[in-house]
Length: 146
Image (cartoon, rainbow, N blue to C red):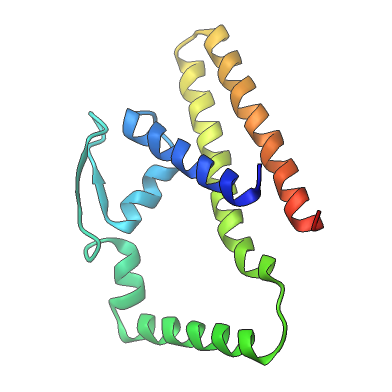
């Protein structure tokens, strides 16, 4: 599977696990973006993007707007000034998704171990272990240029 498809699959899987009610590393990201999820029922309550922490950091003060505009200007100048490697632009997003996946893996394993069901923990380790290996293979394939 290509890296883009794999990243979308992992993101979708973490969203599904979040909305089903499992604790995931993606929950804090959704809170930062302004999505309100009931922690007891895992029900999507609503969305307040302007009240979210990310919106306030980027647009809440004049410094945030200047940082945003400065970053956009640097990227634009860099794209037109010389050739670039597109993997350098994609890399921060991939690292972010990988860190969320690793955090979700750890949280789910701790949750399953707390249920005292060894067979269930083993099944989850096999599923997430296989996904981790395939994700690493996909990263090597993408960055090696094959």
